Image 1 (cartoon, rainbow, N blue to C red):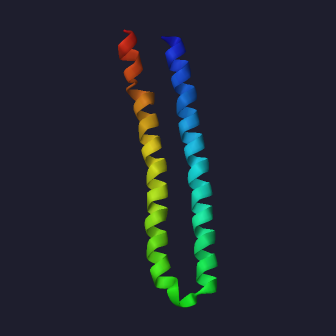
Image 2: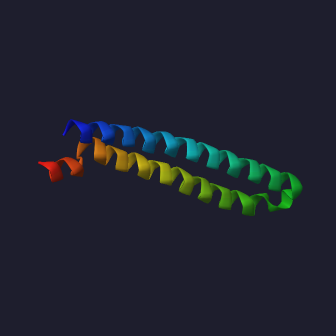
Length: 84
């Protein structure tokens, strides 16, 4: 029982940590690409801006979903009910 809780805690830390790092890297790449495209063609800024905001929301949503799954395992761990 304690081993399952310990491994679950490690998994939660990895989910949140790697998810946050991936979201930060993705947002950085997206913003740099947007600034690159805006500098090359300033007349395309309104079209690019809408697509960038949509993709930034999707990148953030993936991290929020990972946090939700981590909270599920932290407070209502389905693995513990399988052992008991």
